[in-house]
Image (tube, rainbow, N blue to C red):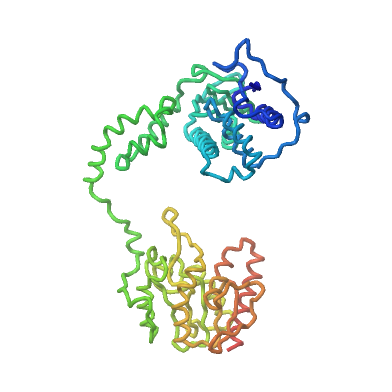
Length: 480
């Protein structure tokens, strides 16, 4: 039997050196023994290591895959007694099976990966369930927490708290070891006991009140909750004392919530909501008029954007307009009004048209995508750029608009509009202002979207870009 002594339960470097030496000396997994100095149940007066510890420079060359080393660093933190033996067994086998770590179905690889997953889960739970309590010492305010992790993850997880609570002095005490942050350095110490941490503080009652106020009885699922917040952690969580009572009252509170009358609708939103449009023909419609095309857009299901939009927004302008301007998509105000370019970007666009000597009444204005793509943020709906699939799906309607209006020049505002018009994503800055031939004999021009001018923070840059935008409009007029 070949024995190796490790300094502590997570002594990865010590295990690594000893395992490397054993492997080079041909010590089989059955003959190798790893023990921790001072660990309960390990070692006796008659046990001595077969060889003294060696420096890394004294150990011969042994190459193993990096994924094994990374896995071993995690598995070492597991509480299982045979983790050192499992890792050495894998190391031994890697000599004859260099691709062993890629075989996820192998019993040793599978077991090691499962233990690494358990360690990662324990680290995650530590981030979620550590509760600091305030105390005072000679240096002032400090925050102390007692935690009992499922595995030895204190040193693995402490840097997370260092990053989160950089401006506080804190200590995390555990039965395996402690972590300390003094505002400048993160250090580690020996194991602690529960009585070394404060039992409670004045902030705890506020935390319990907050927890109780956010407890939703209608969504209570005890099994799911215990799966995420295991009972082993409850004894160190102040809010856990409230769970039995809150759970017992959940049925009564849920019934009261269900029987309560519905709140009045938001009057402001009700005024802003656009009228309901009758759904039009199927997506495959080939329209014979702009009015028929608009009905088709209202019933369009070619992509999912219709689900969250108030309505489809088609173009507007004369049927035989010589100039067609294509934007990206309707914005929040356009979605409610059912008309293109009526929001802030539309105001910039109208002013630029006037400066370029173009009457908007003579221009057909539309968008590459007909429904408003957005994400809710509080009471606001924030614009999201349509993806290539959504633009391609909507070309069905844009191509029909072009076929009905038959413009001589199509001005695309931005890359998304360029994709809808050209069928490819253009480089707007490189191709800007250059006539591009379209099928049917029309010419296309590229320029920026007016919303780009609104986003520029620098007044000088905004004035310069606006001048270029007006110049592009004048170039489009000249092509007519």
